[in-house]
Each structure stands twice: as C-alpha cells, then as structure tokens.
Length: 514
Image (cartoon, rainbow, N blue to C red; front, side, top):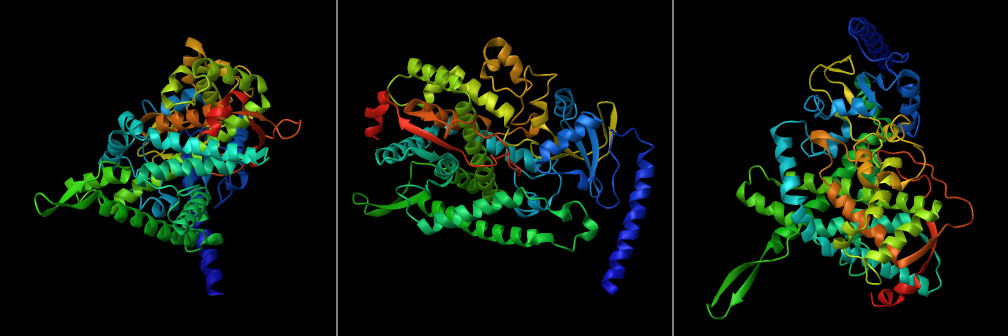
C-alpha cells in the first residue's frame, strides 16, 4: 500500500510540475506542438518505424516541431534549410549529445566519441579518429583487408553456385563481410569464413554485437520519465550492464593480445642478446597503443575500447545495410543494374575490381548516393542536444532540448526532389548532381558529421561493384521486391534480401582462380 501511495504522490507532483512548466513555456515562442498527456508527453503518438511516425506529425504541424518524450523536450526537424541552420550558425549549440542510458553503458559513461559531450575531450577523440584512424592514408593502408574479404565472399558464392545453389540470402553475408573487414582493421582478426582461429571467441563476439545493436536501438522508458527511474521496464538496463561487461572483457582480451604482439623478442646470434623488434603490420589497436605509450594517463584502455566499439557499431551494420538496400533497388530496376554492369565492363574489364577503380565508376557512385537518399541507414541521425538557448526558424529553443533531424523526410521532400520516392541514380550525375548532393545528408553535417563516411563509401562501392561485375542477379519470383523498412536506430529491411544469381560467363576464369 505504501508503494502505491508513494507512486500516487510522485505522479501528482510530476503533474503539477508539468502544468507549471507549460505555463512558463507559453511565454516563449516555441515551435508548434500537438496536444500532450501528463507524464507521457507525446510518447503515445509515436509508432514504429519512428522516422515515418515523425514524418506524419511534421506533415500536420510543420517542418519544425516541438514534442515531449516524457519530461524530455525534443525538437523534430524535417526541412533541409532548418537542418542547415542547425549545423551551421547553431552548430556548436547543437554539438552536444543527450545523456541517455545507452551512452552511459555502451559509451563508457559518456566518454566514448559517439556519446561524449562537446568539449576538449570530444575534440581530442575526434582528432584521433580523423587523423590517426580514419585518415585517407590510414584507410588506404587497409585496402588489402577489404579486397581480401570481398573476394572471399565472391569465392564462397562461386563455390555455392558450382554445387547447384542459385538463391542466396544476402543480409547475413554482408554482415559477416563488414564485420570481418572492421575486425581485420581493428585487431587483425576475422571471425567468419576460413582461417578463423578462435571459433568460440567469434561466436561470443557475434552474439554480443547483435545484442548491443538491439539494445542501443531500443527505447528505454527511464530516459524519458526519470520520476520512474527506479523501474527497469523489460529489464533493458540490466541487459545493457550484462552485455557491456561481456563486450568489455572481449575487447580487453584483444588489446592485451596486440600489446603482447606489438613487440616480439628475437635472439641475435651476432650480438648474443635478445633484442626487441617491432612488428611491421599495424592495426587500429596498435596505433592507439602507440599513443598510449606517449600519454598513458589519457589514452587508457577504456579510451581505446571506446574507440573500438564506436568503429564496430558505426562501421559494420551501416555498410552492410546500405549494400543490401542498393542491391534490392537494382533488382527492382534491372535497367539500372545493366547500366552499372556496362560501366564496369568498360572501365575494368574481365579482371577483378580494385579500390583504385572506383574513381572511374561515377554511375556506381550515383547508385550508392541514391540508395543513401531513399534509405539512409540512420534516418534520424544520432540525437543532438542544445547546450544553451537558441533561435531556430524564428522559434525559441530551450537549453537541454534533444534534436532529431529527420533525414528520411528531408531526402523525400517533394519541394527538394523531383519524383522524390523514385529510384533515379541519374539525378546525382554531372554538375546538377553535385548540387543535389548538398540536399542529401546521410552522414550528418557539421562538427558531429560521421568521420567514417569515406571508409563506408569505399566499402560499399567495392562490395557492390564486385557483386555486379562477377554475377548475374535476378529477383526471386516475378513480383518486385518488398522494400518495407524495419524498426531500429538503423533502418534495416523488414525482410532479409534473397536473390537468384549465377556467375557471369566473362568472369568464370577469374572466379575459378579465387
């Protein structure tokens, strides 16, 4: 009985607080807002997938919309000009991240690059990411890893076709490919296919990565109704703690392994002593361990694990999903597939595609850009938060407001795009296409823009181009492929993609030699 009385008192005071807060806010020129409920705010209006639900609300109330997720004020932007205003003159103000439970647990108490607040620490992490890890030179150093994994996929597909298999489910293949690529660059390991040294470790990493992705994308009621913070609905918080502990142990194992391998001990007969010889191959962990040697008090193992987890989270599922969407779109538009194939035949020929060839394939890039326009894998980007009061679109935006930019809605705005829901890669061709690119922001904009955009474009381009070059592709059945989106922080297909394939006659010789 005492518990029910306590809850009732809490709800009563929260109701009074909400009423008084709304009366104060009426004095400000806030953006339009639909009617809300006590405690819940506008949470009852939200449906899955969230980007479509928010688009429907914006269509009714306007491109700038003020909502409350429980007690948390949220600003929804679904206009290109307003997004540009957010990430230009208001960029510093909106460079913060909201303190959500996912950032607390998966972001090492908001110290990892994706969740850290804007300030000296975040700027240093950003510098490390852009200069030490994701610079053009560093990405180029790992081109062999990407080529090896893409060709390994082609080899597996060719072997299956030789056994009479003609239908392939591509979602899992792309996930395994991108995970191998990122782990190869991060730790020099592969967890799928041949030459997997530790199958048990691979299995654990796969389970942890899958559950982490699910939990990061799952709403946590405690983030929006703090008054009920003592309640853990569906055990989300406990699951986060458990999976983070397991992930942390695995990542620490990888760091310790690379630390032991960083210098090997050789015996020099001429000198009669043991000498340390630094190994030539360098993974991302090796780069970070070198920085740790210069500033051990800052580059702790926790900082390294935070960067590792950010690379895995942002660099695996996103590239895999983009490739899957691109293949799905092309199977629904065979004329586009044929045009891409002709471009590859003209500029690459019967040899296998290399990363250096991508610059000669503008139409392939148009396909990727158009895929990212229609199906951005982060349809709402990552949430931002205002660090001080500001004015946006003529409206007052209070400090501490969470910002969601509905990229999915912007990319399909009929005021910006001709035939916005149609798949037309040609819209990105030539000088006019460059202008179109300014209206497409799948990687965000401003200080928090994704630092891995260049790596993602290389990975998707190499995978997609090699698949088109090596195999003939068709839909399973005569009907067009269902392009319904699933729910989540990223935007997966509702159903994993399956396709009919067979080796191209002109590539049989190359495929047989893999």
